Length: 161
Image (cartoon, rainbow, N blue to C red; front, side, top):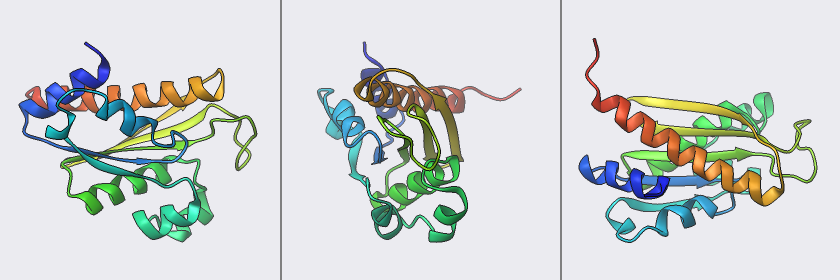
C-alpha cells in the first residue's frame, strides 16, 4: 500500500476530504493523490499557484506576509493551505512551497521546502531540507506532505491522556 493509498483509506474512514495548493510541486501532489483508484471519494481538487500573484489572488495569501516572510516560508505554506481549504470546502488541505532548483530563490538553496496541513483542528507545518535533482525534490515533497496528513489523521483519532 502506497502512502497515497493509506491516506485515502484514512480519509474514507472519517468521511473526510482533501484539497491541494501547490507551488514547487507543480501538480505532482494532485497527480499522486488522483493516481489512487477511488480517489474521487476523498480528493476534491486543487490549484497550482506557481506565481506569487496567484498565491495572493486565488488563495488569499496576504501580500504583507509575502513581503515579510517570502513565499519560501512556513507562513506562506500555512496561508496556502488555509486558502485552498476555504476555496474548496475540503475537510483538510495540503500545501507545498519551496525551491526545487536548480537556482536559489529568496536566498534559499534548492531543497528548502515547506508543507502545511490545514484541518478542523488548525494548521500544522513542516520544514524540509531535501537533496537531489529537481524531480527528486518534488517527488519527496509530495510523499512528505501525504505522510504528514496521514500522521495527523492517526494522531487525531488517538484519545489524549
